[in-house]
Length: 163
Image 1 (cartoon, rainbow, N blue to C red):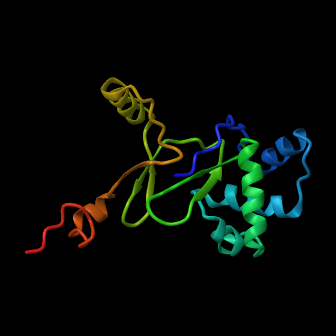
Image 2 (image 1 turned 90 degrees about the horizontal axis):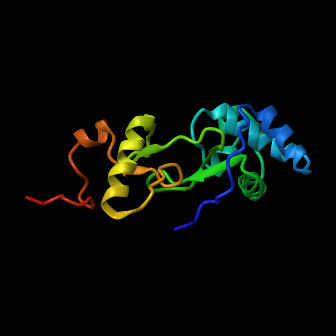
């Protein structure tokens, strides 16, 4: 499992603020980096590198996937972007300023922000039980959303018994 960068999140609430933070760290706000930041801040949800490279639903021009990955890596190392894993599939990226604890559906990939009091209560239970301090923003709390839980389990899912 990939390990997240432990760089503190830069509190940049907009793509423009993230660009200014990038420049303060001595890096250029290249056209490619501007595309990545614009796509991330416009999405309002975690997105994959593939979605960004494809143009993020028309928000930005399509770009080279390798360039998107290189820029995401740089932005993550600086604390401007974070990546996470929402169930199966590619990693997703979001502005680091949106450092929410998440729950993710293992079946459909939907994600939801955990209310802070819920995340705090879960952390307290885990801490008391095994001494770990859980974080739910790189690898979210996994399970099934209400819609998927209401459906019959797929044959490969645990707990499914053929009759």
